[in-house]
Amino acid sequence: MEASIASRFRSGPLPVARGVNVTKGLSYGFTFVAVGTLLFMLVLFCWQSVPVWRHEGFRYFTGRRWFYREVMFGMMPMVYGTAVVSIIALLLATPIGIGAAIFSSEYLPPRIRFAVKITIELLAGIPSVVYGLLGILFLRNWMYQLLTPFDPLSGDSLLTAGVLLSVMVLPTIMTLSDDALHGVPAVQRLAARGLGLTRTETMLFTVLPQARRGIFAAVLLALGRALGETIAVFLVVGRQDNRWPENLFSPQPWIDAGQTLTSKLGGSETNIAYGDPLHWAAIIGLGLVLLVIVAMVTLAGARLEARRDA
Image 1 (cartoon, rainbow, N blue to C red):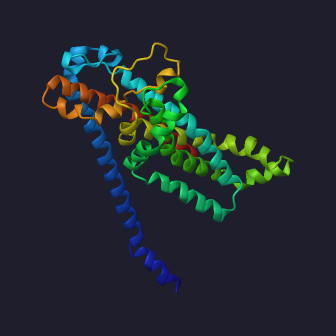
Image 2: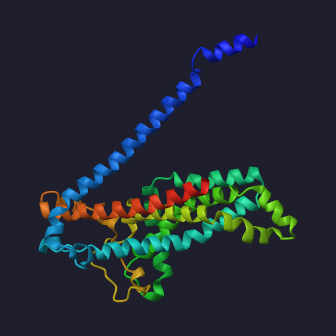
Image 3: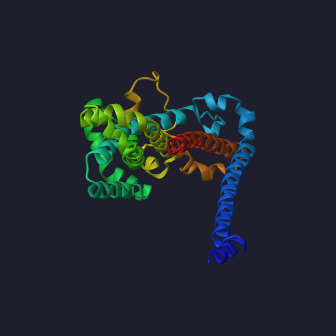
């Protein structure tokens, strides 16, 4: 019997090993396609945006005026709008998402935790245009009524877009933070309780410090989505060009209409620009800057998440 078993092992590699090799090859192949596509997009955008960099120079990035009929292209107000909308979204969604993750991971029974997590994750599957329509129907009017003492021109504003985005990035923060908290070994909690710490102290001084890398990765990945969101922001931001505040740290411009990189790229000006090489190069340049920013933030978040798993 032992001889028959030994003969089976000598007869050749098991079929499982062949399947593993195929899976590995497919993984490398799809990874190569994804990286190659990203590099191709970067090269294409760089090449097509060369005319505007030659025409404007570094002023294309630092300029505060965008008048395509007068051949003036400055993206800084759109960068400002993108930053403000994303910051508002994170300021609102981060404490709620982390608090919900702590409650779900540390205090809910496993079955209820699973149901709550699935419900939150369903929010991420709702199309962004639906969020945008809800923003037009409800949120825009609510924000206008709330800000009436400050005399806003309309409900379309950077603040409205940021509040809407906070709802959209909340599932990302909550789900990934819950995974980070749940990934802390139970033995760490038992050791802390054995030393006399209460349940709250265990969560604050044992669980959260060990999960902080995963929580920060969740916030970065949510920021990547906020930076790249187009349709929902387009519908409620107001799309007002050249809105540059006198004081960068003043929240007053937040209640006014503005423009972001994504709302500019999603507007009708993209079609108008196609027939003009310089105007088209300016639009492609916006896409290049947005792609680089989102890629850097997303890769940073993914790297932190991978280090947490390791």
